Image 1 (tube, helix red, strand yellow):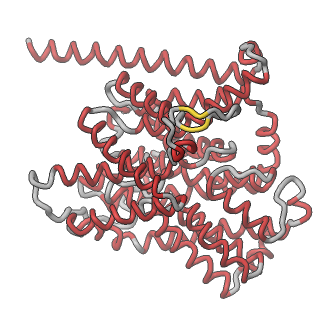
Image 2 (cartoon, rainbow, N blue to C red):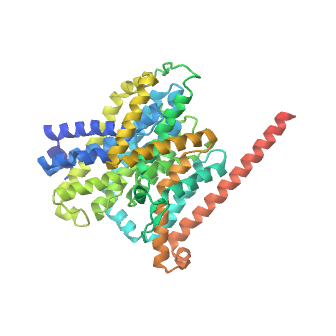
Image 3 (cartoon, one colour):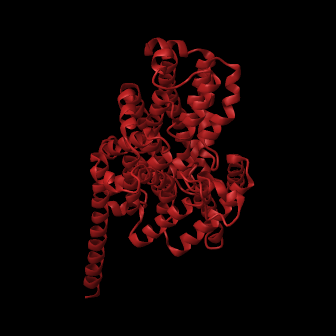
Length: 502
């Protein structure tokens, strides 16, 4: 059936739509402030005029291109195109500064493609059983899972865990601004109507990274001249077969995290890339090298955020529940064409399901070749004078933030978080834990309040449900291990300093 669907999908119109969709998606993913969600939303009206097969071919292409495109700006200018590529900046940008932009982009392209393919295999083979597992998870289990993700703040805190925890708690505090979940009580709004919905993730994250980076560049303008960045001349994707197979463990860990977080409703690639990066760093033999420009960090981020694509499609197709922003837009596309996604979709609309599966595979291949042949063109962006590049980026960030909700308040959010991020940089407080806390905060609080409300204030269900107990035990082990490692590292530094003094 998949083969016959593939043959039916390979018409000139569908191929053109998929190629154009991937290119537009990459552009939306690479431009700070725009996203795959916005690309799908803008092209939804176009699908009225075409048949359902061509419509979903176009929308899937936008989704695939948009998720992967974020790595381009994350690596080249240290500004994530979307929240799904935040962790890519941690090692991608340092590699570009070292003159290894081609290598960094090559790593990102290859592993984003492989992450997508693995998740699609899981989607095609295991969608029904995975969706059944999600149904069985209660609010207690969801709370324990999100709390486990939150403990990974210790992995992205850098050398000073206290500053990292402070940053993470600031992220949680910011996430609490607005109407409280469950009971709908306004919090920390100070009478401002615009704050009732809280701070939007997209302008806040773009402000923390894009505007902060622009301010850093401006503050250093008088210290160093605007010179062209030298790039190493490399062949292919810039890494060897040995290096490729050396990332097998990191690839597996990141793929699993991306798929699992993807099919948990309400999460997605914006969380997956952060959690995978922290998890890979925890399991690394050289965690101190992360953030300095190593292959492992890019592999973790780009594998996981693209693996979340297949994961997010599972609840959409089997339950009718979107796993993230782009799949929420795809849910709208189903409704526009009079199709109800859910358990009966595989029986009532089997040809459409096969079309979506095949379109995902074809668009992934198209994305791979477009990004590969565009490698040298992407690298040339490094040689654009900062005086020209930075104002353009700032304008695009402002336009993208406004277009997020057609709200001027999001523009002010962008600028406020940009200044805030610059102050954090000056003080030495890491921004990654803040983003992790901000992204996870609503999920942790919502599931905790649901669980406590369901148990009528009792904590016993947290201690009696097997999955919840297992996840909470892992949380405790991670916290203890992190503090022990921090203490040992501090003692080792003192011994080294004492030996150097002697």
